Length: 266
Image 1 (tube, rainbow, N blue to C red):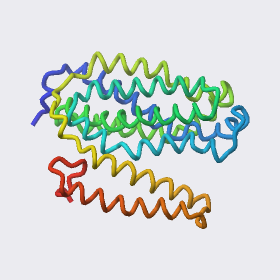
Image 2 (cartoon, rainbow, N blue to C red):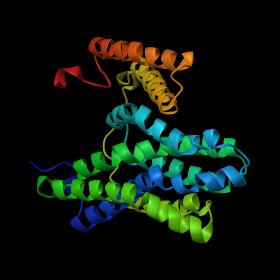
Image 3 (cartoon, one colour):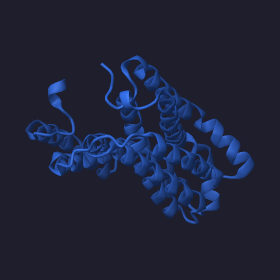
Image 4 (cartoon, rainbow, N blue to C red):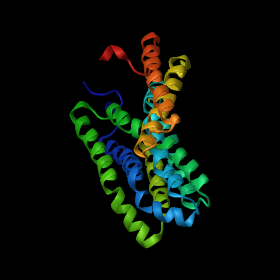
């Protein structure tokens, strides 16, 4: 059975759409590791310490992990096209702010916002392709998106090293801006609006809050363990909260009529 959207879109437009979502996927994946080699330079240029500058990559990954299920649910409720464009625009603006940030605090804040945009790209790109491409081409489209994502992850350190060596650490972020503009234009021109569900009660806000607290505490606790902070009470408090949060989240999803995670699938 062909997808509803796929039957309404010309073949050439489908491939331009695939380029639009693949660009976003490549860039958000690239930014997972692209900044790692620049951390020593950031310590020097922004007059900070390494413990603080570690939050530049960590904050980005943390937001990605925490918001995946929430954004997936939003994609079911509202137009995927505009959610994707909002995410790509947020990623663009935050990349620009990262590139011009004069302080480490502003850089970390911008990276958090960049992660917010990245999670919209990561979740909605394959969802859009699934809706638009017919059955005969859907597997190829999803394979291309997945390949561009892994290419971004793999090339992150290499691209970051080249940019750092020749253009400085700010270019690691600023290089995203023109490519994102191209992606936004292509997305606006090629992605169909699709249908949206205006029943805002369909979003499980309490479940999303519990999940965000749980994952945040767990990731922070594991980070502190890696830093050999086992003797600090707060590490165990974070891990304990994450365990209780996990139990609470699973219970809330079982009770909810429109859960973020449908436990009946398992």
